[in-house]
Image (cartoon, rainbow, N blue to C red; front, side, top):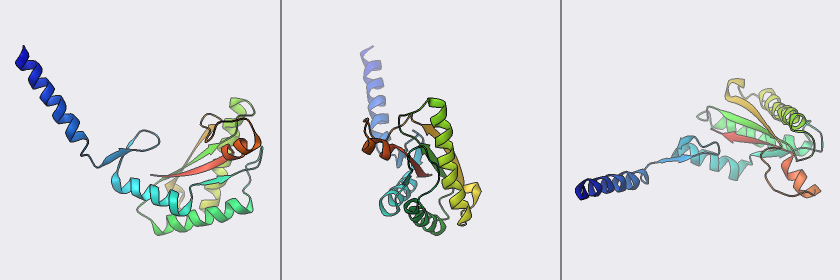
Length: 156
């Protein structure tokens, strides 16, 4: 019995050690991604910026949002190896769940249409609305609300 426990322990430790050597990481959705995809995503977030913000109860793009999206378009056009991006639509905590899901969808679609209009192939763009379910920051003041009214471009 002791030998069986020792063998199982050694096997478990070997698996544990080897799993640390894997070049894969988890992305924000919990899916496995290879290191090169992870570094592309990090480059996009750091050097381009992955989000745009919206006014209260609005889904139209401000001048500042369009300037940010121009940078995203440029990056996406120079990185054809990035096959897909997901545009996440988010809202602040005010309003019903259903209303915010619809508003988040309109926000994500506004970004999608802008990217399409600037030449990014629609087959590369997916959208999803999280409504108010995934706040970037927690709080109940205008500064917090303004940071949660956003669309985030996630590189895959």
